[in-house]
Image 1 (tube, rainbow, N blue to C red):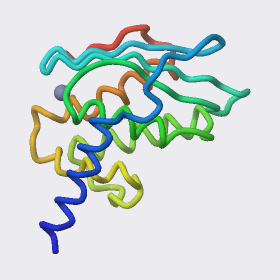
Image 2 (cartoon, protein in one colour):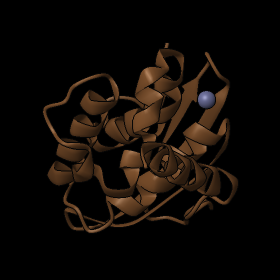
Image 3 (spheres, rainbow, N blue to C red):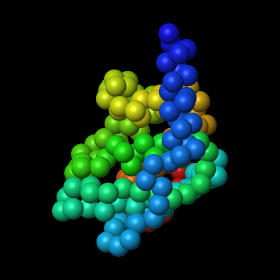
Image 4 (cartoon, helix red, strand yellow):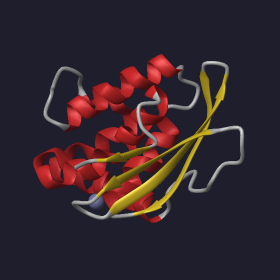
Amino acid sequence: MMSDLRDLYQELILDHGRNPRNFHTMEEPRDASVGFNPLCGDKLELFVRFDGDEVRDVSFVGSGCAISMASASLLTESIRRKSRRESLAFLYEFIDWMTGSDAVPPEHFGKLSALGGVRDFPVRIKCATLAWRTLEALLTGKADEVTTE
Ligand code: ZN
């Protein structure tokens, strides 16, 4: 049963890695931020359009491994309709979880819980968190370009 579930999760990651959702640039008005993971060569640019304080639309472009692309793809489906504050809270929960915290159960992350297997592979964690670090920079305005190193 567990191995079947794991297969299913991997299928979801491969699907989003091969066919990332919301994979396109975005016209103004929008905020944008660039992220780079030199360890793996993953690079992406994230776009968010706000409606007041609410995330109205999210998209990205870039290239990288299946995990980085799947994580970015799932991100675009995860924060739509959230406020800036809710998005930040969610991304910190996700990064904490990816880096080993069990404070929040995996179900909390919906489809993103498919990335749980990555927690066993420390060198790949930066692939899974790149899009989220990039979102953090976009939301906090701390940097236009993020690097995981
Ligand atoms: Zn990668």
